[in-house]
Length: 169
Image 1 (cartoon, helix red, strand yellow):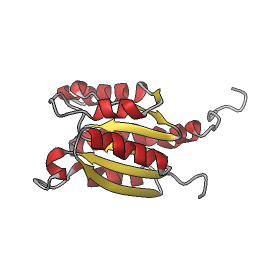
Image 2 (cartoon, one colour; image 1 turned 30 degrees about the vertical axis):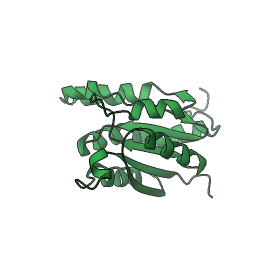
Image 3 (cartoon, one colour; image 1 turned 135 degrees about the vertical axis):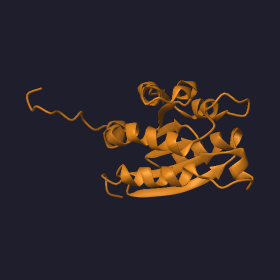
Image 4 (cartoon, helix red, strand yellow; image 1 turned 120 degrees about the horizontal axis):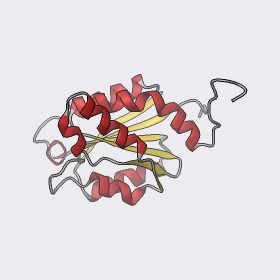
């Protein structure tokens, strides 16, 4: 596969959507946003319930060689929201700046509840994993932050050099 091709997986974490109680709304928004961010191959949305199935799906996606996996949902405060904990079981290295920026941007945009998101981000092998909130708006806002740095992050994960604006820098 071409080194410049980014392969992504969108994962919707929702007990109710996985059970067919209601339609997944944030997953399709995430797929579109990943494509807009330059991902040439975007699979999903894979709709799964929260809990152990999140860990299994993330481990499968790392084994499958995805460059990036972005989840939507399961990052809140309800007892069933376990996505951050399941993600922590899979990642090797944490990238705290991403979720910090996501929460700060949401709060700055007037979404006070953005600071309640417990989403995490990190790498598992050569796969970037990022948790976004479960709302369509949270996905749009999150991808507005993640999109501009996605290609650079994936390059770095794969050993790429830092991009320099000034050749003498």
